[in-house]
Length: 418
Image (cartoon, rainbow, N blue to C red; front, side, top):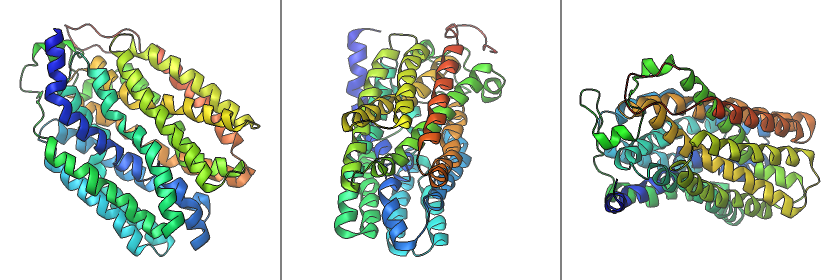
């Protein structure tokens, strides 16, 4: 592809990138639990007397709702213009937080309101946005994915201190209103302005040469992917990575508070996670366009696992804690970029939405069961060390599985079966 053609990708697609970045910054994967519940946990405990484990059941609820419906979102993304789906989901998602601020009064209402908020926001995950990006970008698909997915990093950097300020100044109910304003007044207007009908790669139509060159020429169907070793290895890579990163994200503020930092200090320190997520997204996106993507991922996951083990050991200085947060954030920044790129490269684009969604189910669902366990382990043992050591081992396992994926499939020929 010529330089002119490459530049034209960004000229044509900058609006999609901007709207996708904002949509992923303020979607269900970021705001529902990951970058908000850690700040809200203390105030909710003080107000209602709930344990951390009880509050983190909301993570399970959100994960089950999103995970169970993600394949449907992927199916729709392969077939229809996702603009209306995104608009409706962003609107309902924002209103779900407004409802939490208005009506939360008991543990039952907490669970019910989180259920409906997640249900409304299910289409704001990376599935629809990844379909848009992989359909519009070829030569610099990795970089485009990185730029779009960096939205979650901006969320990690901006939302914890923003939410902490609102909660400490106006109370936790105002905090829920402040969260709801982000999808309603930032993400939704950009979707309305810039997201239209994405290029489609349907099962009934031949794939164009540029798109075919950028993915596996076999263009797996979902059933073909499901009998491939690579599918299940990829599935487990992102299950393990998501469990580790979601557990860290949701507990960094409490972990730092246990180290003696105030809620504001802890939120500010945890916010540095977002800086490294943004850097990780862009750097990884740039590298995987040029190098073997599994190796890039492995070289990022292994140092992050070591840093988590050091955090478990305790005794780190403020600078050491921030360095650990930055390292794990860099690894978190690699996850979703790698997922979209690996699915396109190993399985093709024709059924990208369904295959990506099938992997994303594990990515979204598994942390809902493991994150409360991290809180429960802290309640039981009195600190986070045991849970953090388990997280470090899990991330090392993801690195090994990445290397096991082997060479990219050839660009022509039948689907590879393993």
